[in-house]
Amino acid sequence: MYTPGPLEIAAWPDVCGPAGSAARIRISGKGENVALNLTTREVDGVSVVALDGRIVFGEETSALREKVKSLLAAGKKKLVLNLEKVSYVDSTGLGMLVGVRQSVKSANAALRLSNVDGRYTELLRMTQLWPLFDISNTEAEAVRSLK
Image (cartoon, rainbow, N blue to C red; front, side, top):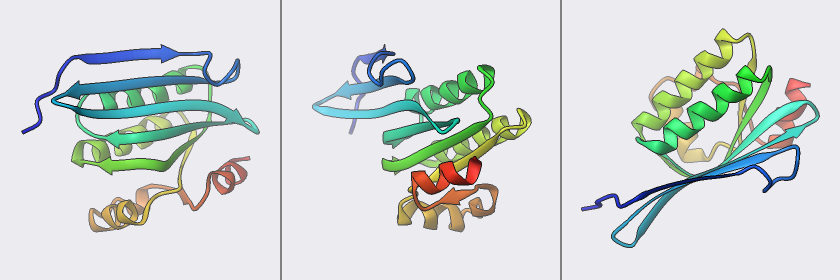
């Protein structure tokens, strides 16, 4: 059984240069590391958040939710969540994605998901959440569609 150890949260605003930021969240315990890394950058006026890791119950979902809220508060109206390096999504992660979509919609902003792995595409279809999201095959396609 997995028992979480100490929680480490660090933000490195200079990782992506002046136009970007990154946050790293790592929960460690019993030799396991579970992490969600978020890297944000601007591409042609679109805020792209690249996710790397697991979207699961806990600090991972909180960090992503807060990142999107901060982008919306900063007046960003075009957002892409690049899921290319997402390794796992649990039910809380799915719920958080729906909540993020609602926050974006309430802010009169636009959200696209990109690089959604086939198993998550199937999960969205099985849970009947597929129609809620605008999904692009690639990040470049998602950015183009929001320009």
